[in-house]
Amino acid sequence: MVLVVFARCGGCKWIDILDDAVSLAFLTINIKAIKMKRIAGYMIMAFTMLVLCGSTPQKCRILIIGDSISIGYTPFVQKALKHKAIVAHNPGNGQFTANGISKLADWIGSEKWDIIQFNWGLWDLCYRNSSSNEQGNRDKINGKLTTSPTDYGKNL
Image (tube, rainbow, N blue to C red; front, side, top):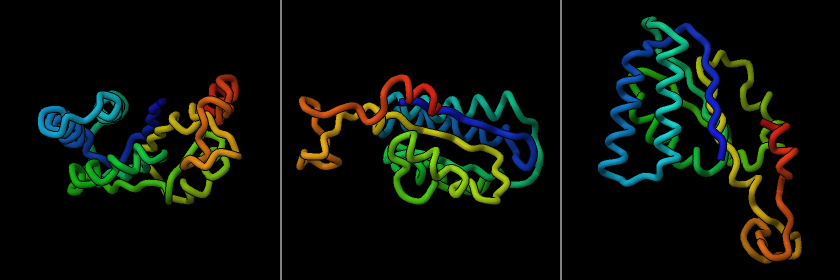
């Protein structure tokens, strides 16, 4: 799975958001035993905010784009940053990178986002077979990778 965060300066009180993101990460580790890749997402986001931007008084606008993993943690980010940021997720499940690339302009829209976080990878690494009756046509024995490593690299 790959997590990429893009940020632009302006509109956010970054130091307070950093404090909340780091606190949320440690709270999540201690209380909920969340997997490390989710914590890495919070830490990368917090680090990017600290390094790239200064402080201003407006609420930050954050767009999270990704698959079901990001759908799962978006409510926690929204709750943790509710007084400091407007956090949104792309509609539905972003699935694999090629799907996301085809819908990216629609998801971003005309909004002025301060941060856009991309969280993709699991769908790309899944073996699928159109004849399989498993959810998502998964079939590790007879299926093919959803996205080749070469195409996945290009998509990123």
